[in-house]
Amino acid sequence: EYKKMVRSVKGLSGAGEWYVFKSLLPNLENQNVLDLGCGFGWHCRYAREQKANSVIGVDISEKMLHKAREMTDDPYISYLNMPLEDIHFSAEQFDVIISSLAFHYVKSFEEICKKVFSYLKPGGIFVFSVEHPIFTSRNEQDWYYDEHGNRLHWPIDHYQLEGVRETTFLAENVIKYHRTISTYLNDLIQVGFQIQAVEEPRPSEEMLAEIPEMKDENRRPMFLLISAVKNILK
Amino acid sequence: EYKKMVRSVKGLSGAGEWYVFKSLLPNLENQNVLDLGCGFGWHCRYAREQKANSVIGVDISEKMLHKAREMTDDPYISYLNMPLEDIHFSAEQFDVIISSLAFHYVKSFEEICKKVFSYLKPGGIFVFSVEHPIFTSRNEQDWYYDEHGNRLHWPIDHYQLEGVRETTFLAENVIKYHRTISTYLNDLIQVGFQIQAVEEPRPSEEMLAEIPEMKDENRRPMFLLISAVKNILK
Image (tube, rainbow over all chains, first blue to last red; front, side):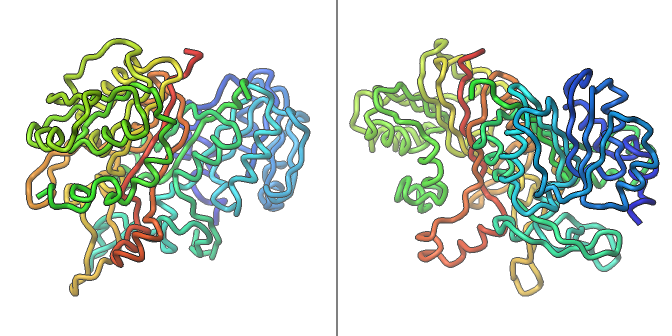
């Protein structure tokens, strides 16, 4: 089912938050890039279009990587099939590490932060997106409707209770991990990152014109994007 | 009415988030401190108890400052009656600038940031709390209840629409300004601050034991606290 979503078929241009994610990326020319949760490899191929030196994409889904490999004809992109928790690279191996909508499936963000910090060169950049903590707080992860099916508002509950959320995505049961905004930021800061920007993308004018329901995305933030730099003073 | 609130009568110990705010403060000994929105002056007097060199408290309410002066017997604390937008101090006049629950009454946070950055010495610390953007998104700023008056959840709406919220506080109409989390953080970063910590306090064990309704404060974040440093590299 995920294959049929706009973002899967059209790639990055089908993802509403891509224009913001892209704006957070540094110049990728000659950079060694790691993509955590690369899925079909759209970001990996984008990085090479931007003249990245090499790209490694990691994903837990062999099915998605199979498709990623079919769509990739580039010896400087490698795909690795493993859980993000199991990655192991060399210290200072990468200039840029990115991740799109993967970390809310990972139990410990702190462990990810420690690894990413170690694998980045001094001055290296970490850019990632996750489902917004406002989005993940309840198991339901849905609007609150009136009896006519109108979206009344976006409900929050259990915000401070971090951990497992049993929810559904495209009619499949999935496990996500809810974390607070402060946990995302403080975990980064405590391992030594300096926060460069925090974004809660709203739909672009093009998206609003093309897809009328997108206007509801101004009612609640769906994604949280963070750009951080490995502080060269550390 | 505000005078009768626990936090007004008991001072800092009556404020649920104080134990977190306090943890973000640097050592205040020999520091020159500015408190923006000082109210009854509790934080000003605390700073002097911590051996601050001098403290200036600013508040728009002459009534509150009258009470603050009654409670203060200390020549090294000065109270100034003016809107926060009108402050004007010397560059690098202060070591520490604090503000408790005032900036959501101020139209431009960016202007405050620029001033605070200028008034701080290099390496100076800015610690403030505001009502959380999740709290301020709707005019109602209240729980969503079922027909029996039970709190169903905390509703979010209009999150991306920054600006005026006409709401009530202790049965009085008040104007607040809603801003997104990303605006608070990016405004700070863009004027040159480095984010040190971001907190969304949950009630302490003591508060939970003393006031049973406090358990609902784990369902949504009510306050946002940020500690930032004037980057000495700038």
